[in-house]
Image (tube, rainbow, N blue to C red; front, side):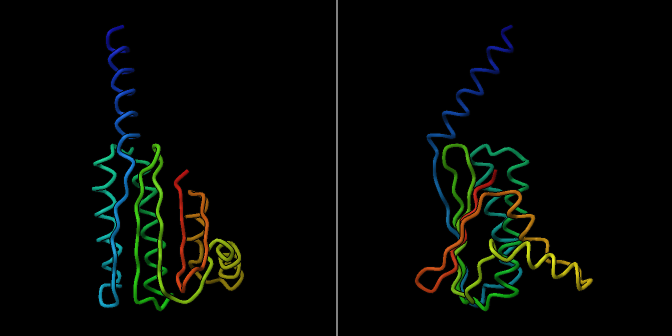
Length: 154
C-alpha cells in the first residue's frame, strides 16, 4: 500500500512540476548553417529540452521524427536563408513552431497528395510529412514572408 501511495504522490508532483515549467526554447539557423547538420543540432537540443521537462521517451522519439522531417524539407527544398525552431512545453504537451523564409509551401495541404503522386509514379519517399501529420495536430500559415508551421504532438 505504501508503494502505491508513494507512486501517486510522485506522479502528482511530477505533473505539478511540469505544469509550472511551461517554457520554450528557440534554435535559429542562418544561411551557412542551414545544412543537414542542422537536423542533428536541433534534435540534440530537443532531447535535452525533453530531459529537463521529464518528457516520456515516446513523445521524445516522436519529436525527433518531426524535427528530422520538417528541417530536412526546409534544407532540401525551401531555398530558405533562415530557419527558426521553437520547442514548447505547455500544460504537459510538447509542440513546435517552425518558421522559415523559403518558398511558400503549405505541407498540411499537400502532404497526402504528394505521397499519392510518388506512389503512382513508383518513386520512393513523399510520406514523411504525412507521417508527421498523423502524429501531430498541425496548423500552417504564411505571414510576413514566412512559412509558419505549428505542430502539437498528440
